[in-house]
Amino acid sequence: MPSSDKNRASSINADVEMVEQVLPSSQVAHTTWKNYAFTFVVCFGSLIYGYSSNVIAGALALPSFTNRLLLPDVDPRTSGLVGIFFAGGAFGAVIQQPLSDRYGRRFAMASSGIFQVIGAALGAGSYHYAMFIISRFFAGIGSAISLTLPPVFISELAPPQSRGRLVSFHVVFLNLGYLTSALGSLGFSYISENYQWRLNFIVNTALSLLLVFLIYTIPESPRWLVSQDRVDEAAKILKNLHQNDSDPDGDFAHHELLQIQQQFEEARHLPSGYRHILATRSHRKRALCTILVWVTGMSTGVLVISVYSTVLFAGLGYDSSGSQFAMSAGWLCCCIIFAGLGGLFVDRVGRVRMMAMGGLTCAATLAIECAMQAKYLGTTNKAGNAVGVTAFFLFAAAYNGFYDAGSFVYTSEIWPNHLRSEGVTIAMVTFYLTNVAWSSPASIALASIGWRYYIIFICVSVVLSFALLAYLPEVKGLTLEEVGIKFQDEVPTQAVHKCEVRSEEKGMKEI
Image 1: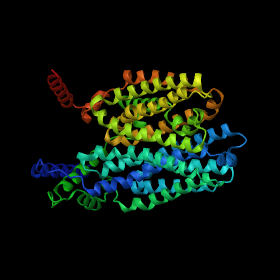
Image 2 (image 1 turned 120 degrees about the horizontal axis):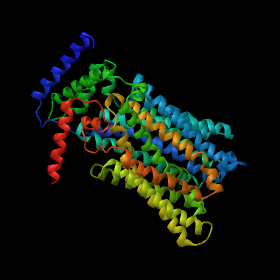
Image 3 (image 1 turned 90 degrees about the vertical axis):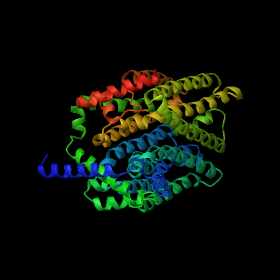
Image 4 (image 1 turned 180 degrees about the vertical axis):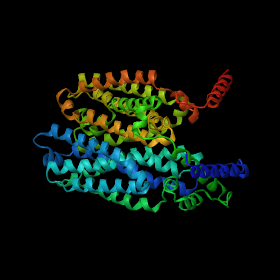
């Protein structure tokens, strides 16, 4: 390390120690209305992701859309539309990191809105299949940024003691976006004109455009500003975020600024990048764990069921578009409720156990679905079809209550700070590529082999869920040092001793 950097780091460390001595232990930043307001603005991008992702499900249930763009090859064209969206998402997951790191969090979020404006506007105005395919690719790019960036942005604006609670709004708004899109489809289904399917894409365009303007009403990430040596701007934002009646001088904001500078100085000299991940045994294991988590989650079939929900409910006796949209909206309400409940237990049960329980429970509910569809699909047996519908709702409860609760947090917290951006990118690229593999052939598979397609999800989910239990280290309640030891990082001896002492203390408490 150059001597100037050493002097700079030493000065920052000394300032941190001095502030920690004078800062009262009870002095914490209160969560204010500004924190919630800024969080909701960022989460508006999460909502747009859900809306853009689910808007195609509503279109597929409308004859006006099918007649205009999908005939005569309905199943292959449907698979193409779904696959191209996730392919665009994989590209968006790759570019979100350089956009965010180079130009800032707000610019990256705004670019997400612009991509989705282009995609939704082209979709609303499409007059042939090729034009609509292009629109879904652009929508996929923007949606990936909206899915990936909000948790990072929120965590960098939130006070430490409420960071987890504020970040959890990301998942809530994702599901609200799905639900809002389904309700829009339900409302527009009552319009008899041939342009009815275009209206939800027009709403999608307007909401995406609103995101572009809204995102600039909130401050930039202080952490990103420090990384660009714009320390004075970061100091003003932190003071505005954390200053309150119990801390009129903004001591906590000053303390946090010094901590950010300290962390950035330490990370500046640490190796990073994908080449370093591949060259380091512990980081390769982190990458494999991240990939395994998202391959397992998507192999439950959750997004196949979500995207094709209206088609699946049609097969269970709901013939009208209105009833299909209503059932889809109810299914998404179930997702929101159980996503909230799952967050209450993930810190008690553990991330790995929660995800394994989710994968196995999803497989069990799909097995029930297979049995019902094998015997009653296409019949007028109301009881059998009702059990099939119930199985889909139980699937939603299992995935959102168990798997979703652990997946996002696990694949973020296992990565050290200086590699977290790369870890999140690995997670989201895996998310989208796995969905390309499962969702692209889904329309053809459901039309040709029907419920037998679920058997593939069942078998893969069971095998991979046990693989999670066998391979993934549990990191619930661990410090970063302890997480590093779980992955066999090279750590100082005193850190290992500290972890052993903590483990002994935990054991004594349990006794």
